[in-house]
Image 1 (cartoon, helix red, strand yellow):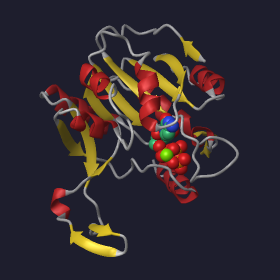
Image 2 (spheres, protein in one colour; image 1 turned 90 degrees about the horizontal axis):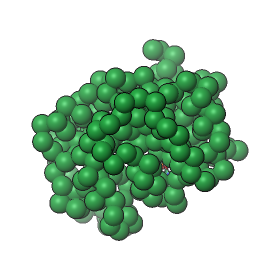
Image 3 (cartoon, protein in one colour; image 1 turned 90 degrees about the vertical axis):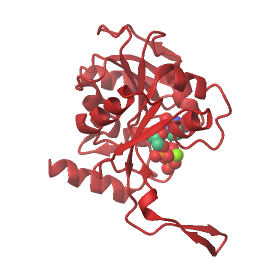
Image 4 (cartoon, rainbow, N blue to C red; image 1 turned 135 degrees about the horizontal axis):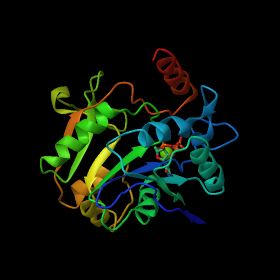
Length: 236
Ligand code: CTP
Ligand code: MG
């Protein structure tokens, strides 16, 4: 199924957001895909969708929904009056395949594509502005990164091979922003082992910059993460 709707905004040449929400949420468990797990009484997806729709940086949105959950995603967008949602597509087997499916619905004249995980509900204009501003300075991609708080080691089985220099490491978050044609080209190739879009753009020879991430952009993976995000939401 591929429910395309007409964009309401003047999105010509603008910035499109892809909201990937098609994962099953195996590590979270529960009776529904993670994007529809309850967060403060609403589907998890509602939080990021509402925030992207309300952002002046974003012109149009494509949501990748889990198979059989396209209709609930459309209804949710309608309920939220998320008028920038141009299409809801069926996601793929992997995150990268979901991005690829969503990209098909991004207008040909889009200049910039911002890819965001629905699993990171607390996206805001601060981080969106940082990645888009860096992108405008001439890189092919821009990602938020947070320095790891733990010491990180490279291992081989149960042996430590090397202790990495923490000063040169960041943990990659989303939203990640890309020059649209660079992202399209990167997604044409082999998608195996890609855990984020930036790695595909890097592999295709693109330049990717990093801006400060946001500790509030925790990715909901387990029940404990869901509780943490709920507390962060409560705290405002
Ligand atoms: N995602 C997607 N399509 C997939 C897999 C993941 O759109 N086939 C999305 C998820 O919905 C999520 C983001 O990519 O917003 C990050 O993935 P992850 O946190 O791993 O979510 P899940 O794959 O759903 O969780 P799990 O790995 O525990 O099954
Ligand atoms: Mg996953």
